[in-house]
Length: 244
Length: 298
Image 1 (cartoon, chains in turn yellow, blue):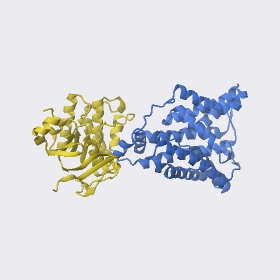
Image 2 (cartoon, chains in turn brown, purple):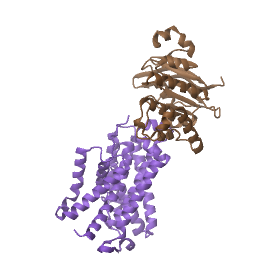
Image 3 (cartoon, chains in turn blue, brown):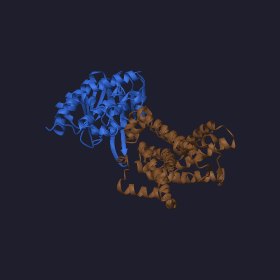
Image 4 (cartoon, chains in turn green, orange):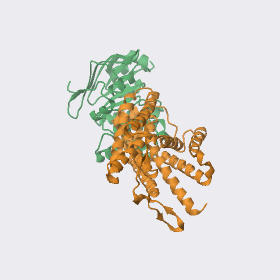
């Protein structure tokens, strides 16, 4: 139990009368890739946005244990700007690149809370090594990037705060199949360097293949959970999300 | 027109235009971040002029002190306006903040009438700024005419450096596109908004001080016309763009001074030119000279 990084008990999110997330409980261990899959509108993004403090939510528990000092704090409804300092960062759905800022400025914004100039430039090089295309385009405005490049920038920007828990919301959405493979191999690589990852995906097959643990979200509630491999072989999951 | 007269008009236009620009920068920064037309900005400018008046003429402090006190006091007022009148309305529909801005403007003006009285007060200009300097070709300029554009350009230059070379500047530019994403990066948005109000107010204070020296009197409604014209300048240059605000201000200054210089009979229509410019730009290039289409934020 020492290893739990994020623990959520009975999370509920309401948008007015719409009950988007119901009694969702999940936990993420340090070093894992955990994925949350489900159909469009199942509440996946709401869960991740709630963890990030972007939507008001209710929960019995939402606690985060920082591997930096092993202190456990409640992050329920903690303002989003306080999360990066704890070591949590999010690459949001729809990439949310700042269009008039250059690629490098977008990345520097990701390192906003940091003051270690040397470390920041190391991480900038690290992000450029993961995504060489971004280095070529470092002086270009975000708006001039292709969809795939914007996705790389969103992931790179989320890495710039040196997060312990990296949350990725639909990183493969709208990407060409060859880029999808690339994104998932990079997710593996980032994880192998010691970062814990929470991955929200519609592309269930690819997500389950990389995930240590997976939760299936159905209309706002957890339907199934298990290891990635278990769910990949689960007939119900195969039928509903993997095309039989 | 003789060359020496033209040069004098040119310097006049440059100096009036850079004052408009300096005020316009405050409008454009706040609009860029909050999509709010800060109607109280012209009145903040007026406060800057009054503070320097009281410091130097009433309390007989040296000008250097007066200027510093005025900038600090005006900045505090600008921050208070944001804190009291706009911050509680951040989540409210945008029209609420706009109405609040109009209210704040009336409040400051009328409060100034009560506290300072409505009687215009003469500003004693320091002779060092007013003694004309002779140049070759019969050009005579007062140092103030040169000081105003130099100070304005210097300050806007500093502001641009801050916006493009520092972290708070990066955050300020980022917020103007996407507040939520900027928050996720750990930027505390209210601090950056306060910074924008503070900087805008400090620049308005400097503009107010120089305005009070140039047109040597202060009165509670002195911020209205320059405020509206500076707003036009901001729209003209492309609202949201700092260089645009400065360019818009300069164009407005030149149109105003030069139209009167070349067509003295039209001098009564001086203020109308500014509004004609506004109508023309809104008809033919609504985004202004340097403006880009600003998306409504979610």
